[in-house]
Amino acid sequence: MKTISLTIALALGLMMPMRYHPPVPESPVRLSYYWPALGGTNCHSANWDTEKNICSTMLYGKPWQAWVGVGAACPVKYPLGTKLWIHRLQRIVICVDRGGGIVTLPDGTSFIDLLQEEGIWVQDWKERIIKDKWCPSGCYWSGVSVIRDSLRP
Image 1 (cartoon, rainbow, N blue to C red):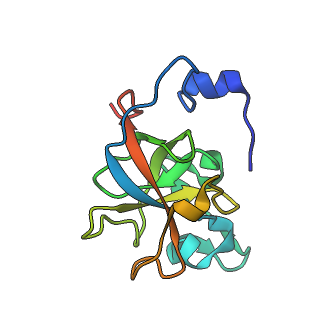
Image 2 (cartoon, rainbow, N blue to C red):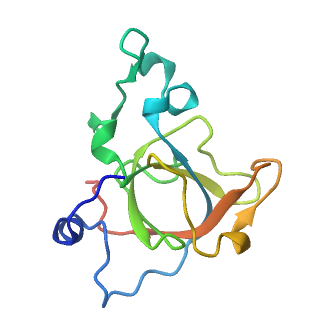
């Protein structure tokens, strides 16, 4: 995973200062992740270069690699550019992508697909897994809150 300095993260609004209390969760989400370099469902077929074997997806006006560790595919109820506080992960992500499976389900939960190379690690993972018809092998769940100073105009 790409690392950035604390100063840069605070300046970009990707972390909350320690004196700031995170907002109350507004809605439940199911967390998953994707890595466009793997191809398949991780990269839309129109953006896959079969000769070079690479994904050339642009997300929110930048190459997908620019959003590693901070970008996420979010349901349409969150406009692109929205910053979300993911409570279980104690971090902010920015909605830069959509996805075919990134929807709000009948039970009120939504999928949020984090743009990162490795799987999601949650400290209390045994208590935070949903297994049902939408996540037969299990999904992490968390509360999410919109950070009001989003990148949107």
